[in-house]
Image 1 (cartoon, helix red, strand yellow):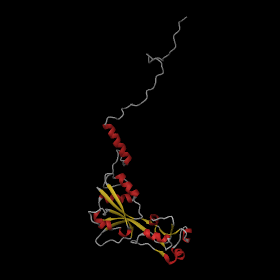
Image 2 (image 1 turned 45 degrees about the vertical axis):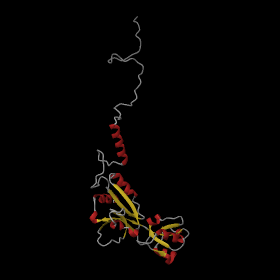
Image 3 (image 1 turned 90 degrees about the horizontal axis):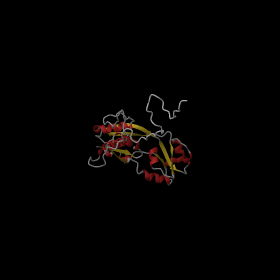
Image 4 (image 1 turned 90 degrees about the vertical axis):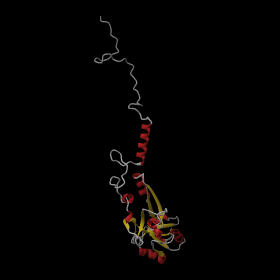
Length: 257
């Protein structure tokens, strides 16, 4: 069985995917990126194709198609930044307001909305001095260039990242992944039980590998016997005392006079 995850550009799901692989090694996970303008497409794609997804990491707001009921949980906010050429006056500031941006950049500044054209092209134009752009910080980081710099815009509206999935297709796998994203621990996990040892500790990949190696040694009869491999302590060269009740002595008895 496999969980399919789609994530919008700018989102980094590496940590959550790693936790899933640790907890549910027997359930595969497939992840793929998607353009923001088509972030809900994997939920309406042909089930026979690889473009479908069970759960998505999306950027709000969503343009939900009619007839598609979604479960949506907001996760975190993204700070808005303005991207400018490094030689621009804004590049000297630590942060700025929208009013300061309008004063320094003029009418050439632009906003950001889902469905914007290729941002790679937009960044190329900004580097050439054709305007500036306000984008989520993760997008600026994704399209970073040596000739561009991003500065926080303190009063610009932040964007939000959320996890979403079709309500009617809520499965145990989806619930478990949602729990991981929201910080649920392995002990509070529900549905798919992770592998644990006798003390209830969740086994990591390293633990499982060690257990498998130990089982293989036992099966091959190579497990060490108790005491095997211990060094023998050398004797002190004295003869054993034939009478344990009396102290041993190496002194020769002399004749009585």
